Image (tube, rainbow, N blue to C red; front, side, top):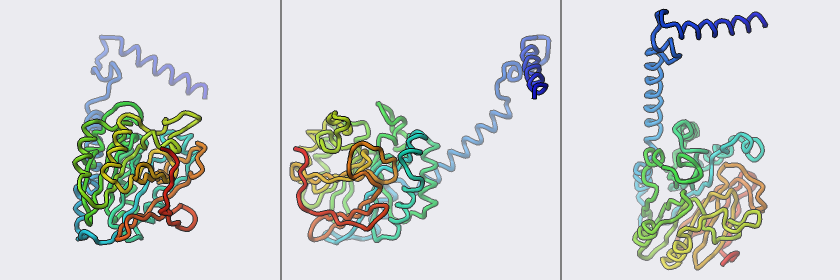
Length: 338
């Protein structure tokens, strides 16, 4: 052991002395420890191959292709149908979170369960990856392929799906792989809206867009990641009000939802389940898709997904816990904050 250590130190010292001697013939790469042309070429080829693989795996999950698959169902206005809502799925950004507060394979288990149900589509409410970088998205798309996802799969951007989960940063990879961060579509006469709250705000431009896309009669359903801070029962942590939600534009957004008579707003970000009726709008928190379950003092902290039935009687949810029997969510009003 000791002779090996001495030999290693001597070789490093000899290499350093050779690099400092200008009379010794060496390439620049050898002299200064830079990668060789061969090594650079291999690295570039490897990166290009990984990029092509990621582009190929991501292509089927673009919003445009998934919306085409939904339209192929041929639903007409007034038809009854069902869809699924799945909350936060990223396994935990830090290993200690994964070790203490999560169970391996929860997201994939729930993903497989969705495929056995007669859903027209599923909506994932953001935080698909722990951080929006290529390596993490590659793992995510491999998960979708490995679990045989057949039900059309739409997504709403979460804060973790951006380049960094906190602070202002870009969503370039999300846009590259999926499409716009704000989008709307109509299915069977029902208006669906996916709203980007991943930067913990709603801007005036977004409010103007919402005013347009939510115009008209009929059932209206909104998907977004971060709840408004004024839903206090969910966004209060350690005695601090609103820290689990966003404030910038939240009041104006909620007022607009009430004015436009939005039927449902489905949200994630907080890894729990809950229902509140505010201003004539039902807000449903469903963040239990597979992310860590932190001990934040909430009572309804468990992994789950929702199935939603839309029919002549309106909108009705069924809660599917990871363990246990499904439970129909009562339609009676739940008023927890004003």
